[in-house]
Image 1 (cartoon, rainbow, N blue to C red):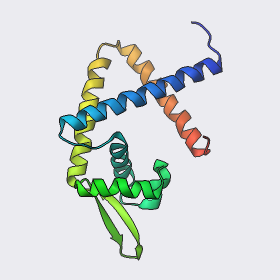
Image 2: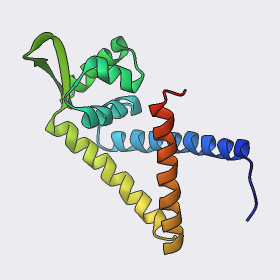
Image 3: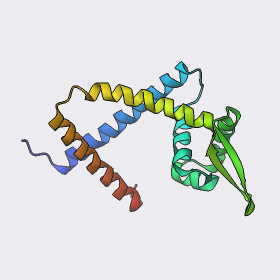
Image 4: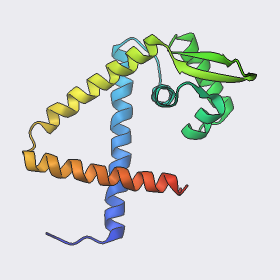
Length: 155
């Protein structure tokens, strides 16, 4: 086993993140076109965030997605128009608007996830069982590292 310094490992990890982001954007773009949707990868990302946080306030969604509220409003207008999300008034405070997925929005996300999981499962099937265990452990560790970075507000 060859030793690697922390800087080189960090470079490899950063390259991995960039490549995986590009791969996912290409997958989403292709799948959206195949489904007859004109949604952008940023709109899909917003749908995923709404699903995870729903029902959520616009300000919360803006903060978590690192998108200005004005840009987010424009994006959500398109998602509402296409029937993928809906805005809800907060009964406790009429000034607050919450956002949640609609059934068609949930169905779209399930379809995209199913397509991507199927592709990844096919690629992972060739790995020996021991390599799958090792990969899973490493991915869990990377996830913990990211959680730590996010919790500490590091940028």
